[in-house]
Length: 101
Image (tube, rainbow, N blue to C red):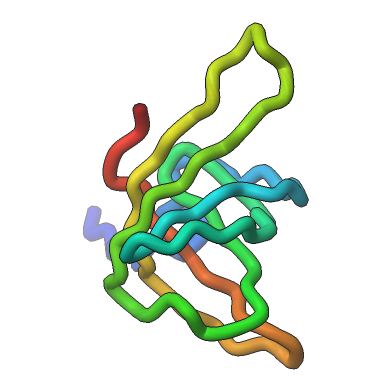
């Protein structure tokens, strides 16, 4: 029997579903630190919302997720910008995690 392989859809390629959250995170890029809004996150990456196009494709940034709960330390992540999507007001930035510590 001959089987024809179908290309995977974007949804099938994703290892983990994204968790939709709205939270502030700190990003550091070229010595500048900004607070930005996190829109969603999973184990491989996240998306953030920014008012201006401060970040460009292939930029490398550092991210810090702060938790006010002293029982849990802040989570730090290094990420690459993989997409910059213009919106009516601002930009949606897709990030791919390269290191989590």
